[in-house]
Amino acid sequence: MAARPKNKPFCFWFGSGDPHRAYEWKSGLNSGMNIKDVQVPACLPDAEEIRTDICDYYWEVQRFDREAGEILKLIEEDGELDSTLVVITGDNGMPFPGCKATLYDGGTRVPLVIRWPERIKGGRIIKDFVSLTDIAPTFLDACGLDILPEMTGRSLMNILSSGKSGQVDPERTFVLTGMETHCTSYPCRAIRTKDYLYIRNFDPNTWDPGTNEYDYNIDPSPSKTYMMEHRDRKGVAPLYNRAFGKRPEEELYDLNKDPGQLNNVAMSPEYATIRRRMAETLVRKLKATKDPRI
Image (cartoon, rainbow, N blue to C red; front, side):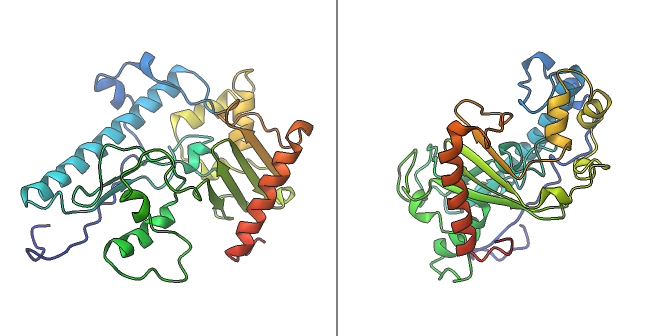
C-alpha cells in the first residue's frame, strides 16, 4: 500500500488464511468466549467438543475482522476511505461436516459486505439473491467499463445505488450453485429460493458404498473426529449420514419448516408440484448457460 502511486486509482486484494483450519484447540475459550453461548448449527451434534471447535472458529473469524479493520484504517489515513469501493466476503461455508463442500446453506451462504460512501447509501440490508460471480461485472460497471459478454454474473451497481433495502431487483429471486467431481465422485447442482432449496445429484450411484464418499473432502477437525467416533449414537447418526453418506438423486428442503435442511421432502407427494417446478427451472437455467452436465 505504501508503494502505490499517490492520487491514482488502485486495487488491493487481501486474501486471509482465516478462518481456514487448523485451529489452536481452545483458543476461543481462552480468549474469554462462553461455551454456553454457542448456537450449534442444526447439521452438527450438540456436544462440548463441537461447541469448543466452533469457538475456535469464531476466534479466527474475529482475527480476520481485526485485520480487515487495520486495512480500512490505512485507507482512511490516506483520506480515501469514502471514495474507495470495499468488498468483504467469504468464499465458502464454515469448515465443519455438513457445511463446507456441500450445496446446503452451510456450504454456499457466505458473508458479503460492500461499502462505498461516495456512491452507495450505507446502513442497509439487501435481500436479493446474489453470487460471487456478480463481483467482477460489478467492478467493471463501477469503473464505467463494458461487462464482457461471456460473464454470467450480473453487476450489482443498480441494487447498490438504489438506496433501497430488502428485495430491490424483482428478478433476483434465486441463486444457482454447483459442485464438480473434485468434491464428490458425481457432480451436483442446486437452485435456492427464499422458500426452497432443490439439489440435483447427477448419477449418485457411481458412489462406492465401501468408502466414506465425503470423508476426504471434509477438513480434519475435532468436530469431524467426534462425529466419526460417535456415528452410531442416536443423536449423531442422522447428522453423520447427512455429512458423510450417499445422497439421493434429488433433494428438496422446505426452508420455512426446515431451515437446517435436514428433512428431504423431494419424494413427498405434497411437494410434487414444487419439486417439478424447481427441477424444471434449474434445468432451464443450466441449459441457458451451457452447463456441461445438462
